[in-house]
Length: 190
Image 1 (spheres, rainbow, N blue to C red):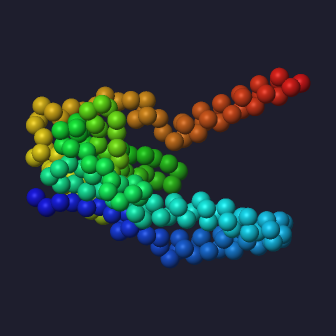
Image 2: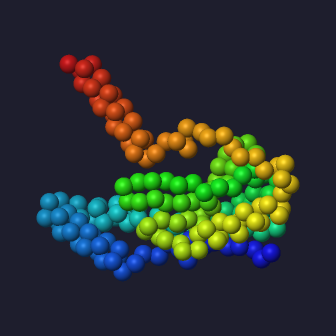
Image 3: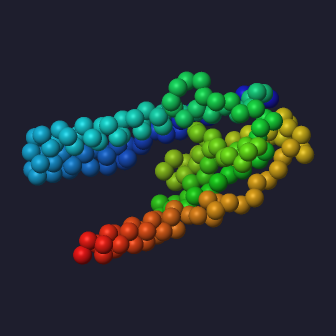
């Protein structure tokens, strides 16, 4: 079988409507900053935005996954080599679905011998970045895994709390904790 490569720069390309929206947002942010904060505040805001957005874009364009005879290699955009996980260390490969108010996103992940899970960058599907061949690519990865491992070594991991915890539930819990801590701080002060 041929080696599979999934690159972020092939997947995460902004569309013209996304770039247009970002441009309008930046112009509005700049106008508001100049009006409210002055020139110095404007440059601080532009610098802060560039410091956050620049590295995030760079990392998302440089991430990649490779599936081959040696195992699965993943690189999150920092460094060039990535890390290879041999087939003997991989116990399970599945798809994780994450639901939010913006739709669902799907990511291929592998579970290691010790229970750690790793998502394969570049092999994801969402409404923002759709991948029409996602299911086919996932099955190609699973075929590599099944051909490279013994059936007795393939063990489905038990469900963990993070599998049942949705972003909405995490946000509600965080909101309640923040409210409780804020209430305790104000009660202690006065």
